[in-house]
Image (cartoon, rainbow, N blue to C red; front, top):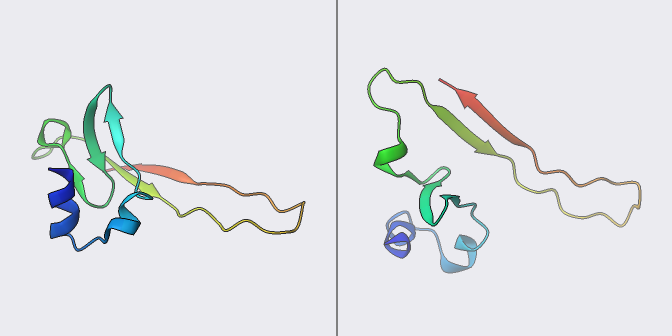
Length: 76
């Protein structure tokens, strides 16, 4: 179960809610940095992608301050 994966990784419950989870329809495909479903993982010399998600910058009281979430996918 997903709960067991988080427990095995030592991720406390209050941090789990903020971790991104990628779904294909109803199926959980990946929790970046933690686990990828075998069906969707690159095998051997297959091409794959690496999903890197930078954390959200804390809001600022400055109205000109823009908040951005940067998502990068690197191919290996």
